[in-house]
Amino acid sequence: MPRYRANEAFVYFGTVTVLDWLPVLIESRYIDPIITSLQYCRENKGLSLYGFVIMPNHIHLMAYADNRLEGVIRDFKRFTASTINSLLREDGRLSILEWLRKNTSDRRREKGELGFWHPGFHPKALFSEDVFEQKLRYVHENPVRKGLVRRPEDWWYSSAGEYEGATDVCLHVDFPEF
Image (tube, rainbow, N blue to C red; front, top):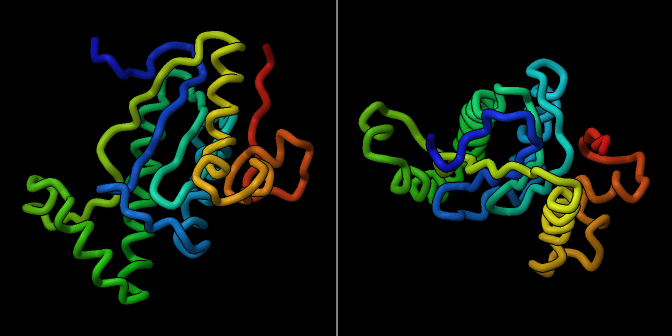
C-alpha cells in the first residue's frame, strides 16, 4: 500500500503546494477561489474541514471525507488550478504563468495543460487527540513563524480565529468531537 493514502476513518493532515513554492497566493483575488472551493466541498462533497491555513505558496488542511478524501482534494486542486490560472491570464501575470509552465510536468505540458499545484497531498492520519492538537497548533502558527502576523488568530486565511471564538471568518470549520 502506498505510504500516503487517506483510506481510513481518520482526520488527515495534508499540504497542497504551489508549483516550485511560487508565492502566488498573495492577493484575495487568487485566494477567494480556494475559500469558495473548500466551502463547496464542505457543502456538496462530504468534506469535514477541521483546520486550515492558506499561505502565499501552500495550504495546510486538516480534513476528513470518509474514503473519498483523495478524490475531494483532487477535484479541489483541479478546480482551483484552473480558476487561478485563468485569473492570472486575465491579470496579465505573464512571468508567473511562464514560471508555472516551466514547472508543469512534461506529460501535462504535452497535453496543453498548465499546472498550478505540486502533485499530491501526502495525507498523514491524525490518530489521536494529542496528534490532532499538535498539528492544529502547527497549522495555526504557520503565519506567525513566517512573520506575517503576531498572533495566529490575526491571519484572516486560517481557522485560528474561529478556534479563538471569532464569528467573522473567511471559512467556517468543523470542530472535532473527541
